[in-house]
Length: 359
Image (cartoon, rainbow, N blue to C red; front, side):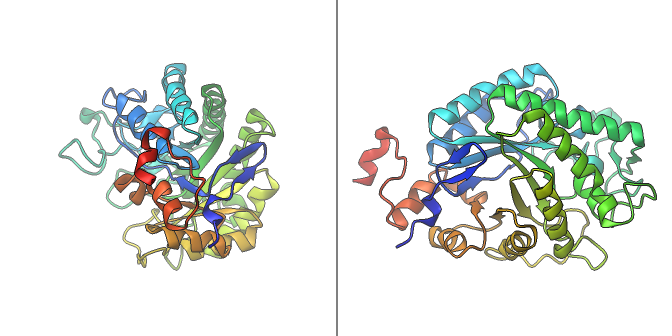
């Protein structure tokens, strides 16, 4: 029996205890609407750390107020948010988990009703607390309000916002940073020809469409230094003929490697609806495998990875370097401990208070 899932992985100066990670999953639980985490977040992330996850990546966190998906999202554009995140990081560290945070700008998919807590859907009106959205072009996401196309000054504001949030993440004690370049949010909007119709240096060729992402990577790397791992989440494909393709994402990954990125978290879709996504167990794993081969970077696989032996097989056979287990971790925050039992790994980090359950 192999124990690939429980082999530590080292990214720069950070050793992470296992290959079962928690991906960013929006909680829509900032009831104060100010980006500051609530008691829910302390309980939520603490339980995931106690359950044995190797690394936990905190949900999409807005680098500016208008970069939030909804008003109930987390933010990291001020020091009050930083100071409220620090105890959550400390709690997770006390349980042996590495802590990451996903820095995000929702672009044209911002200013929407959260998935729960309101009766509305789609874009918020100004009367409901909504705001003007931005994107690479004025093309709206289907069913949402049209964005304002960013000009050069607006792009500079975005870059500087990612840098400032990265600095606060370091100050809060996070171990790694992930930039959100997937799911149809701003950086993905620039990457995809479905949403990027610019005619300047940020549009047209794949190299131009990648320019903003690479500029942010360079600026964030300069801010956080050489020792801290930097990840990027990418959609491996748009699943549409005229959209972003997996071979293009592999090329973007190769450029990201040259610019100091350490691991790619490969998801899919989100930039156009509807899209013919072939959903099924492990359906995104081939995307992670293809991008891994093309880019030369380690990858994380995510999406309907629900069983211990399925997760073990992905890592043991080199399809991806880590698995990011989302919905199953919501159903069972102790999934890593259950997986350790299944693959007969005897050195899992079981809290002594719970040891009797494993005798």
